[in-house]
Length: 416
Image 1 (cartoon, rainbow, N blue to C red):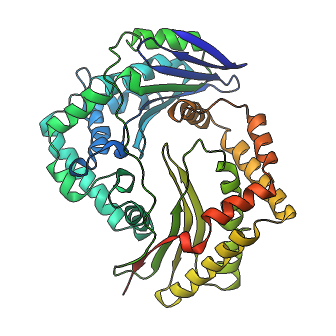
Image 2 (cartoon, helix red, strand yellow; image 1 turned 135 degrees about the horizontal axis):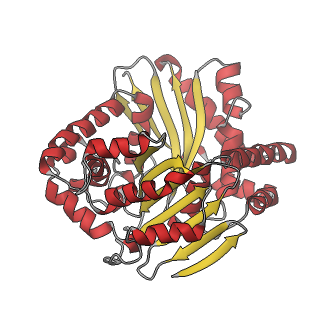
Image 3 (cartoon, rainbow, N blue to C red; image 1 turned 90 degrees about the vertical axis):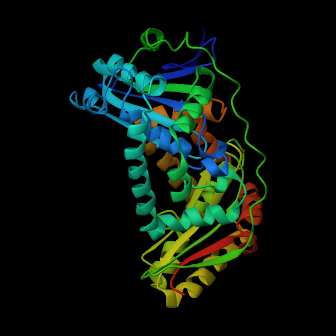
């Protein structure tokens, strides 16, 4: 193993079999957040198997060789802790939050889930129903569904446009063999990142992981590559749905997580639609009364990114709302930000970054991100300095390229 000290209380270890382990000591707490990330998810799927990564994430909680589903649920909860999991476009994650004294127990449970799921056919039929209900829940939530439809519209033929949950058709057709094939091919040390933050010692963490077998497991096959991401389809699409509001997303493809333009873009979207002081909130909601909810967003993935605006408004005012939003996008694209507004945006973003890292779970996520996206480590002060160094010219260039209304893919979901 090779261990590198990244900061006073932060370490990174690379096992000979490829597993990556990061930890950060937070001496002022009595808890630990720990997680295992598998670098495989929906972007690695074929269309007929859409949703298999998410279904596998569900199925590991149905039991292992040593534990029943109830055992898994009780193991940490009776100690005041808890388990959680999610599937994103780039990776699948399993996490626990526990008292510091229960770290050995948490690692044993997480390892058991990830390495030894039973994947029984009888459990599959039950959990399939659960996932189908989850899909139905999204279908019944138009302000969630419109984002799925927007992504699908941008990349109709690429996995970044697939639904993470899958479709009713694909989930209904998945079999036990599909889950076992995915697990056997991807849940290996070379494809895994383990991160922990809280009241813990890195050397002890390594010993506990060694006891769980993480440094002796076979490294597994080469990680699966992602096919090249094409430019987003730029179009306008209206999808009829019997809803009281019309839900609209205007958005575009941007760039991957590691791109140096990330902070200029986030500063722009902060000004555009983050919070009550944002341009869109003040203009669309406060001045014109066109919407209850209007906000900007951005997501950065390993191979691309997305930025845009959501608005929910009455069908009779949806065109007006979109025109107003496009007007604000055009203004930012052509004029950028004034020195005063840029300074305010920097202070807002720095405050958000600092406040977001006040918990062990947030610190754990930050550690995992370093390995998941091959990002160099920077202290919080260095991150804040980078934000301060963003120039008006950088912001103007990013705005000109990505906020042009003609670049936006627009999806309406609502009544005809």
